[in-house]
Length: 339
Image: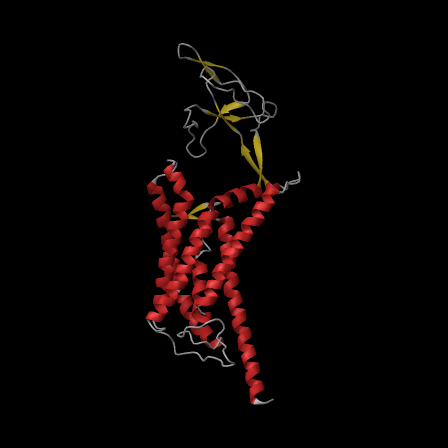
């Protein structure tokens, strides 16, 4: 085998390595994005003093992946993955919409059933325009008390209605709009709470739909900001100070993402008075602090990854790359360890 053939074989081996590593980073990026859109705000959790939407947990990985792609494959490929992530989000939304539109068959597994105890707000029959409360079959319910002309309450009995209480405090529940007690609906024959069945897929669709606009707008702004700032710092430092372009791009872009997604998702609730500005700031602060800490911690794996991959892929991380680093059949050699 002549030297040209040997060089060609080496180039193909290195090229395959680079494409395989690129596929891993792109796959982790897209998988994290998919989880963000599907599990998003389905649950809020506490990590220490922080209040977080569960969808935030995998999201910091997306910035680490775009930083690796930017470092070894250049700005064009990083932007390509960002656009591909947007297309994936749209595809997920379409499939969820399609699945929600097509009627479900009557059969449900135990895991698909979501049972909720039926609650009824008691209305005052003497009030103008009041309607009798009804059960899940549309049958009218007797009010537990009727207000008499002198203002007193005359109790009546309906075995299907019992006062509902808060599960944590044990206090009676009261409708904040009508200031009437909330009653729990029981079956008179079995003496068990009457429940409404919901479909698991419907819950996922509804919780995803509420946050999808916010996540897509924030995603585009934050990811393109991350890619732009990464290469800005790289050019400014001439490929040195790896920690600066890693943290400087990620921490700023995650602030953009956090403020946008929280404000768009919950801004309407704040304006309507259902949530306070203080609560909104708490969610923003908790989400960003979590992302900030993760961004600081991922500097270590980023340094290790760049050091190892620059040799494995034979790419100089200090240089700006456009697409594949194999140009004209030449293999770029790794540079010295970046500062």
